[in-house]
Length: 587
Image 1 (tube, rainbow, N blue to C red):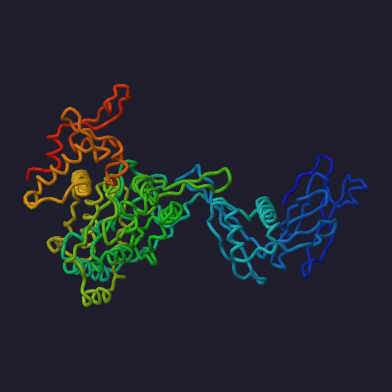
Image 2: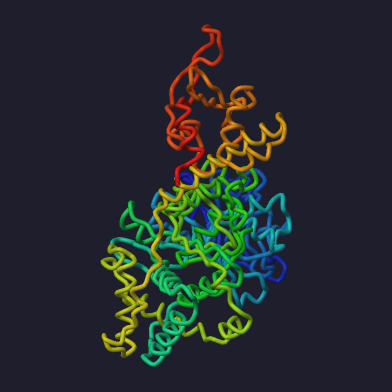
């Protein structure tokens, strides 16, 4: 560790001292020093330069000559006093010896603060080293050390740790700067796909590839009643580890996530596990608690580009506890199409971006979200009652050797390219499957037909509009009949024979007696006021104006009440005839 001295004053330490059972050798050469310097044993503007020693220390108070230093024999970061011949120990601070710091500059996010990794020893023999990180900053490392019980003096630990890190940066060989990603998976860096800590193997035997093809055929033919289900999940799984690369290549392109919902015991989670087996993943399935806050969702999305299975997400329903999880839903939407999941503070003044690396497979017993913007970003597959597996079928599934599917992932990893990922992902996955079957020794005429199958998605906009239409119709009918029933005599037997007349009777009664505060009649026109928004909770209807397009009314301004001094307000206005057509459609 070098030190800076005044131009005319330079000297080196000399002597021999003992701390515990350790000996540290010093050499001292005085030149142009006065007697006061000799007595003090330290220069007021600099630090000692230690020769022939690996001791790391940092002077933190030149008046008292206080230092933080590493004691190799004790295996600790310590606090002490520096004299002209030794460091006089005072306190043990942290019960480790740092060996190396590595700073990782992310080539994908070059403006982000580099992550830092600590390599350290915590035993006196120093035979093994451990690693903490990569972390977003030194404070995170210190917190992990505290959680591990290594802090012996919590009040001085932050100063000691930062001081020792500063001293390590001044000595050669203790700090390294690397340009690299720190999370596993596949990335686009400098127009090339790089692989980081991947789980795929390099050697592929044709015999194993044939076994894999046989299992794929069995799953496609016997696994599910709907023959489109398995091929769709398989094709998605083939491309899913490269979803981040797809977004890097084209900001307008993305791989949808999967939403599997329906009957329990229908094989939804099994399909997620099959996706994991293709990529030789372990413990890749999680529960909803791993994504139930923006922080947890961001953490899950930023750890790997491999797909992650999230089971039982039914709590993300339309009402989701009065909008409790709206932030999660919006974060999912942006993470599917963008490369950033969220931002977080890594210090009091510094933000960093958490990348949206992986794709999620969500499973639920029922469809969770009706928002069209959400649904457009998903491949949605329903599992009806007919897909429920018997106990015998479940046992047969458990007997299958899903590990052999890893050969497919190995093959994909070796043959993936930027050109393939620029194409439509469904077409690319079909070509990859065909090439895999050829590699396994299958002739072209022997390729199974199921490779071309795919579960086509419904027109999301049409489906959402239909649901809005019938939900609003049911709401208005229910409000009218309920108010009519509470304020009039029971229906007579004659009116009971015609439900259409019942609806219109109830509506006329409510309009005449002004029982519905949001529904009015003026000059033979029906007017709906904005207070209707206090009562409805219909997916897709988020603004008062949305109702106009559903009913066929006009969004305009009108005065409510007989007083001409009343200010005009925004209302929905339409004819009684249009309202009747909406409430009583002609089938």
